[in-house]
Length: 287
Image (cartoon, rainbow, N blue to C red):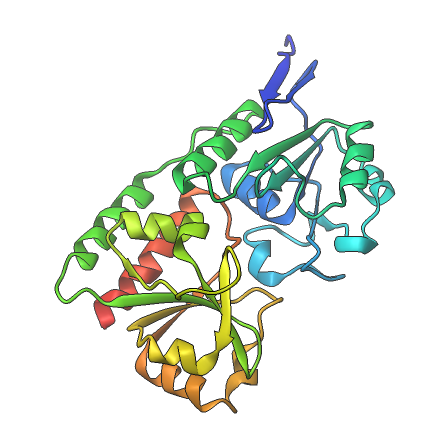
């Protein structure tokens, strides 16, 4: 069978080419979980400066730890470890400006001297649908079938119907920082949250303060916003909920609001997106 040449232009408009579609993909963990959902299994993944020596279970998605290696994260992750997996393609994400997330600039530059790197922008200027579409385009170029979006369409229709009921429940997205502080998400900064707003969800703005993506404040300020539903960050870098029980403001918020586990770095797949919309719809229906 004749091999077909491979070509892909990433979100930096940098073009990677090969005589045949790459088959040994190393990816940032969120990108790897996305590709797994789309039918492309990476040989290994790596984390960010927020991750540790073990993979974050929230970001692992459907990846099989017996089949996919974890190469490490942050300052401890060297180019040598990435190249030791013998990739013919590295898939990374960027939060704007084309900078590879999770790698220092000099390491990213060194990596690209040895292997093609496809960088997909997942930042504030991109819609969730566009990000999802770009990952689907990359997966198809690597040999994956088109993704079935039937469940996503149904979940979106259901959420719109639930969100249109009066009175509309107010939703707050947050990341626990500890028993004294919480990061309140700015909805416009997160593709997932902007997508919820497009489905009619009434997302709470956290108010003025420093931080482009989060407002860091006391739990009392979060409780005063009186959300009916709270989307709570479950990544490893967020404080576990058991550590918050000593704060009366958290206990008040937990008692008054429906708590929905939220992974701000969930896979960019129709499957993961549909599951998230269904979880939010379940919570809003129960308010």
